Length: 106
Image 1 (cartoon, helix red, strand yellow):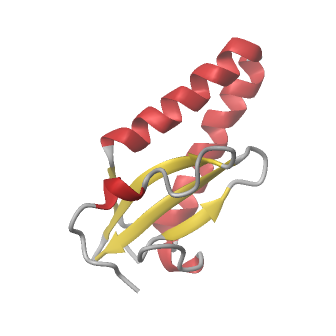
Image 2 (spheres, rainbow, N blue to C red):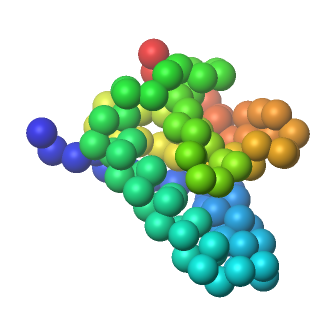
C-alpha cells in the first residue's frame, strides 16, 4: 500500500521547533530524542492514519509516549495534514483556528 503524502501547517512546524528548542536548552540528548520521537510518530501516522481515534473538530490525535505532546491531524484523500504538535500543558484546542475551511474527515 502506498504511503500517504504529508502536509504540515506552518504553525505546526513552529510547535515542533519550539519544543525542540526548549529541550535543546535543557538537554541535547533529550532534544535529539524528541525529534526522533516526532519522526517515528509521523511515520506511524503516514503508514496508517486511521489507526488513531477521532478527536475534536474532525481531527485525529496520536499521543506521544515519551513526551507531553500529541500530533493533531486530518486525513484528506491520500494526504495527512498535521495541524499541531500540541503540548499537553498548553491551552486546550489552541490550534483550532488552524483548521480553516477543510471539511472534517470521519
